[in-house]
Amino acid sequence: MTEFEKKYMANASEVPATYEPEKQQKILMLIVVQKGTKLATYSQALSSMECYAKRQGYDYRLVEDKEYPMCKQKDFMFRRHCIVLQFLPDYDFLVFLDGDMAVVNPDRRYEEWIDPNADLTLYERIGNWEFAAGSYIARNCEWTKEFLRLFADYETQIPRSFHGTDNGALHIFIAEMLYPDLHEDLKTCWEIYRKSRNYETLFIYEACVRNVMGFRRNVEHLKIMPKGTSWVRDIWLTDSRWSREHDFMLHALQQQRRLAFNSNMVDRANMGSKHLHYYDPFLPNANWTGCADPEFKWPLDERLIVANEVITSTLQRLKKQTEKERWKMAGKVEKWVY
Image 1: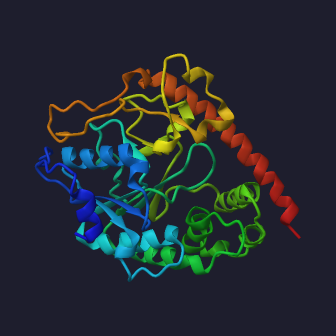
Image 2: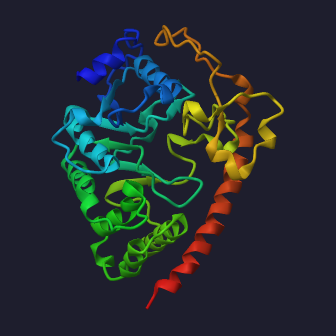
């Protein structure tokens, strides 16, 4: 345990895990933060993940990047994938997580998303056509280690443009690594990537790569979960509402973006700024003491829990909107073909 972890864990309650399956895979939940990160910004999210790990019997590590000097990547977003490599050999699977992801449904388990035929499981975001780099499930095997090593070092290959760091780079990296025969077809995508100046051109580049790949999601070693089927989604997509049947973890919980909730506010949330704020899914001043106890009640604001049909219909509508926007962006690729 590093000095950073000792400091963080000083206030954590040492409660034994309650999950005791007959045969359990050794799984680690790993969060990597940058040196100097104010953990209070993610206090509710981190508390929920730590408590969930204790409750379900997973190992849990929250680490600071500077504790791993062997990872020399200049960009923190790439460096964190190198840090994943330092832990993976000690586990069967590693679940990499962003610090602003929170567990709202502690009865679900990561094994639901472990595919025996996949060495690395990614997911597609709902609000756009990106592969997410902020969370994945990695199997301890040589292929995954090589993938992560090459991806962490890929920061040297990205252009000096509005490149979207690791999330933007992930698309062209996957295409080049898994489909070397598409090298010529990707030249136009590279041209857009090199000249990207804002989110619009970044999204055009990503749409270009996805079209060249043919929207393949399952190939040897790699699985990409379709929209709305992964272990986590953005909280703002449904105005902070969620359902027990559909949801497990929610993303983008930062304390400074919280809004106080009352039952009249949800439906009036402005679509254009949803992603900037959210209604806290947890009770005010939530107390996580003793959270690993089987009798512990997750401190949820149950006014935000809705019927599964409400969530699935909202997400289905958003997926259709996103698909229309993707084709709109893909149509702009022609401007870059010479």
